Length: 452
Picture 1: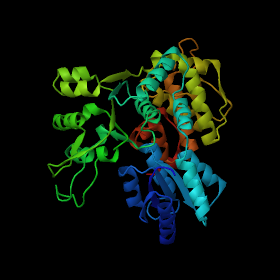
Picture 2: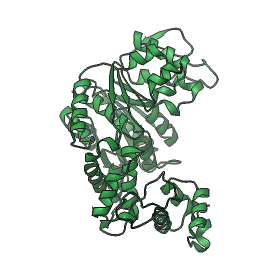
Picture 3: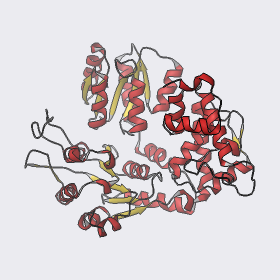
Picture 4: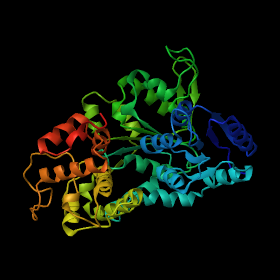
């Protein structure tokens, strides 16, 4: 018998919810359900479920939109089975692309449900190891050493501090450690400390009891309680206040969590991994970070090098994401010209792997030919008035301003001159997009107001 798992059912049909809940309970799992999409999203984000059964057709928020939020924006660890009465292959492919593990078409039998749930939950640890380690792309000496360090550290319960620039993959390293650890069958709970509201941070981390403050209408678990027996990942830990730092230090020392509104502390068993792109030693020296907490969280420090310091891995990473996004967008792009690859290798990648991944996705959307050349690549963060070539100082083929103009024109055409969609894709606001259109003299006719 598999270990008891927490499963959430989000479906607006009461008969489906009740039927699934009965079957899952008989399988020995703890099943919760809701027919409200917004409540389902909140529960999925807050409650550390192992598996979510998610209907595609929901009022207010579509199921695929919820899936996108869970997997792309918040990287929720729970596996997702999509439920739909519209069982088309394109929808199944889209759901899988967005992160779903399996797909059920209504009406489905109890046996089909049980098999789908078992397939999702009974993944062998060796398969999880291979899948997660495979996401650490690169075969340089540095990457091999990093993978070996992760393997060794994962077997312990030591507190780990991961440092590195933004976009280097700190959360991926933390997830890999969890997958390789003895806690791999429990929850991995990521928390972006920079996104937490300061006056609610204590409640978010440690939980609260009903009536402890205005708006506390019910008891609520914090991230520590949700991560009990599993791994808690605190990203950008330098953003927490000194007051919360003191409380966090006590939680780490005592393995006890005091909810807001009570003096009673609950025992928790959590493996803590933290990360930051700040220099915590300087934060300690300036008085913004407690020295005793720094030493508590950095028992095992792991530094992730920026991409520019292991350039030999760039080609492998580029090919990996080209394959993914070529399939995702049905792109024509198949290979890179010598100049284009030379440019990718020479660029400094200030946004690291995240920027590289976004660059490859952009060109897969916009490139309409098999060979990717210099004019298909646009690097953000450079001076748009620069007169120098994009990166490659030897070709001198095209100025950066020419590349950006061409890139914006292609994006406008691709999105049928819809300003909101084009600006969102380019990562700028509409005002900036309109300014660039005017500066470059791009002809949009009367379509410039489309999407306003």
